[in-house]
Length: 302
Image 1: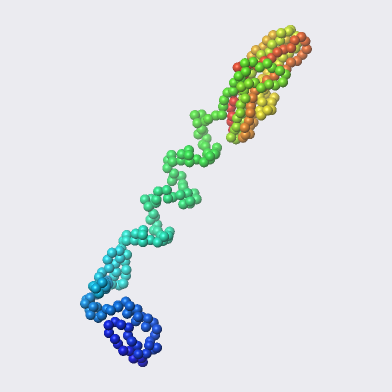
Image 2: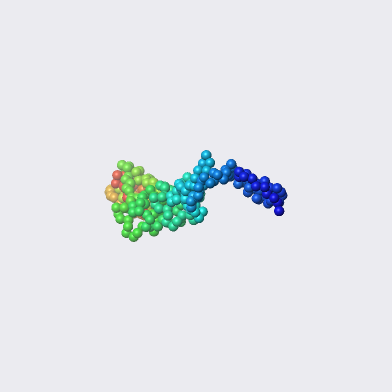
């Protein structure tokens, strides 16, 4: 058995044979010496008897007294440390320390959400239900282009007051157009239109024709009026005025047609000509009065 010589003054005991003492005991002795450096037994006695839940506090002049823990935490005689309510401030929290698992159910109230903090990326798919949208909250600016399709409009929901039709009137401007046996454009009747979708253009036209024949012969003069689409004469529908023999015919003659348009720019105009037939003396003359020639159009989606 190794012999230990005791020393007083709280210094590390001197071991007669250090080789016989475990290394961890030597380390513990050194730590005790560092902790209670130069404290003596008399100072410990002067502190008095300790109370439950109190700590022995050392001041600048030595041992002060037994003190109860105060401030943000308390300490019990059982060794339990308790942090006071509402004592952990924002400054005490490490970055990213508050995870989803730490939050109690329904703990985040509306008042705790920062203005503009809920971005589109924070919303789960299909999380905004109809009941969550305030009345009159969806303004025109919130609607994406072309998002209101036919399927979104209830039957009979679009009244005439809400319907903005693509209609108009084109009026001829030429005072008088002398007709030839080849079709000519009637000034003032050219229309350029660009439908957003494939559409039909309905046209109601009136031609102001005049045919004159000075001689009593069997020669005939016939005036025709048609519509031209993108440089192509539309011959299926036409206005017609005829004069046989001597005399003058002056009148307004109607023509209706429907043109099929694609979603592109189109040019429409009115044209007219005269066809002379028969044999005999003189040649009938024909004309088209611009101020009596006009048409109304209406564009409807296919």
